[in-house]
Length: 317
Image (tube, rainbow, N blue to C red; front, side):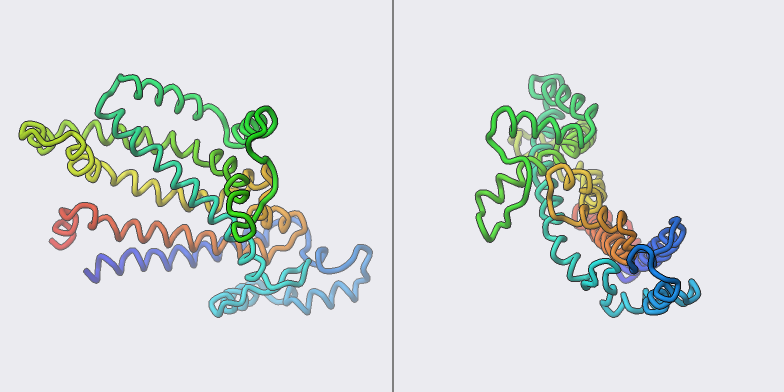
């Protein structure tokens, strides 16, 4: 039990450290001088040197990394070069938008994909399977940003049933909040539905041919019980693994969708910080996104034995 838990946690710590080093070094390689974002245009050399000294940019690279990561471990991500606000506070203001968008997109994708994938595997070549195959093939050929623009044109411009831009907090108006987030969620969920449906269908079709499922059919068990209890659980390993990867990707990859729909999430924060060369904000966002991504995948890895007791026996032996 200790070894099964210690290995994923050890890998988690190692990967986080590697990400922190990579983020710090990659941003150091970007052309230009971060001092440009700290001083007004045409500033004197003395003012530039003062800014460099104030923010520790004149220290050796290793010392700067150790100072930065030491402060991060204490919960201090520094202050923005351009706005002079606390970086962690800026992220905390925008993170709920990106998190809600990613989580709702995942829920919608799974809610659609699981029943469609299960039934398509049970009735391959049927009407639902043919419709699902056609829709997933069409969605697969359309990039997410193009799909977002199409949804805006259809539901926002032509039909006028959904708002296309802006954000309304849930605390102010729950109905308007859901209406404003509907199109962004559909844009992100559509692409994941393709992946989940095809993956689950393939695994389910293989599972339905196994002996224990055929035996359950021979005993006359209800179809719903066979599909859900005997087949779906065993076929969910790939789905669980990919879901962990997808939720992390959604959290860190909502940049384009947030820009299309003018959402005040972390994506727009990163874009604005890159344009203004506010490196310390970019470092914090990337590091926290990686931390959340690796945490989710570590939890998924530890949860495998809960899905299949046979894995507990294999690992124990």
